[in-house]
Image (cartoon, rainbow, N blue to C red; front, side, top):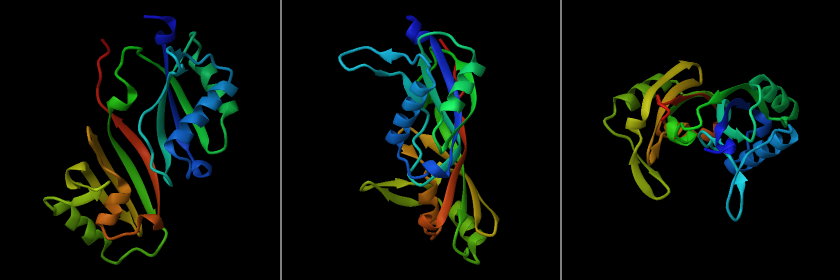
Length: 214
C-alpha cells in the first residue's frame, strides 16, 4: 500500500441555501477547489489522466439542502484532523460549511457502497391539505406504490422505512438506499399527491452499514 492510499479522511459538511441548486458534479468540483485553496496535499490516482482521490457518499438531488453530507479524501501525508478542518473551514465557499474531520480506515469499502439509507425533512411552502396525516397513513398501509423513474417501473413502498407528518405542512421520513433502488423524498411527496417543487427538502442524516476493515 502506497502513502497515497494510506491517509484517508472523512469530512462532514452542510450544503446550505447558497449551494441548493448546485448539482452533484459541480459540488464535487467545488470540494476539489476548496481542498486546493486549503493547501491540503490531495492524493491522485495514477494513469493517463490522474484524478483526485475524493468520494462523495451520496448524490443530493438538485434543489435540496443538507446538514448530513459526507465525503472521503486521501492526502499524500498525514495531518492532524483539527488542522485539516481549520483549513477547510477557512477555504470553504458560500453554501458549504464543514463541521467535522476524522480519519477513516484506508481499506474500508468505497464510501458510496456503505450508504444504506437517509433521513429527510420536508416543509411545504403552500398550505398543506387538511388530510395530510390520512394521506400518510394510507401510503404506509399500501402493499405497494408503483412509480416510474427514467421510464422504468419500481415499487417505492419498500424504500420507505418511516414517514410521519410532524406539524402543519411538515414531514419527516427515513428512506432506504439499496443496490439499484434508492428512495427519494420528492417521489414520496408526489405519491402523497403533493408538489415537491412547493417544498423545502433537507437531508438530515445518512445511515451507513457496519463495515469491518480488512
